[in-house]
Length: 113
Image 1 (cartoon, one colour):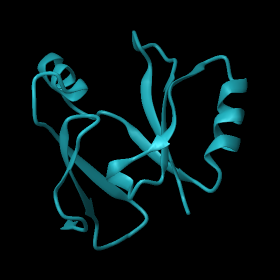
Image 2 (image 1 turned 120 degrees about the horizontal axis):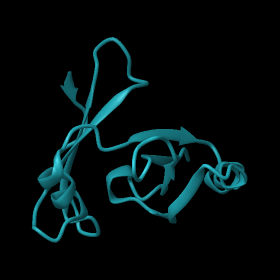
Image 3 (image 1 turned 45 degrees about the vertical axis):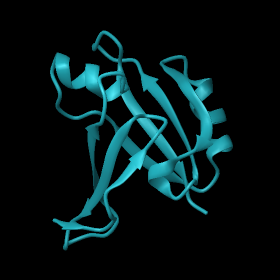
C-alpha cells in the first residue's frame, strides 16, 4: 500500500484522514480514519468494537444514485449530499443497508466530478 494523500483533518467528523492505494490497482483505496476528539462519531465506533467502518462507492451522479437507493426499502439515507473534506469537497452521502446487523451496514457515495 502507498499513501496517496497527505493526512488532513475533517472538522465536521473530527477525524484525521489519509488514503492508501494498492500498487496493483488505483481503483481501490483504503481510507484510514483517526478520531481527534471524544465527540467524533468515529470515537464511539472504535470504543465499541472498531473494524471495517464503511464501504464507499464512486458514482457519476449522486442525486440519481440516491434516488435509486431510496426506492429500496432496505436502504436508509442518513446524510444527504454534502461536500466532503476527504474528497476534495466533492459531494458525499451516507446510508445504511439493512441486514441482520442491528443497524445495518454503513455505505458512502462520492460523486465523481
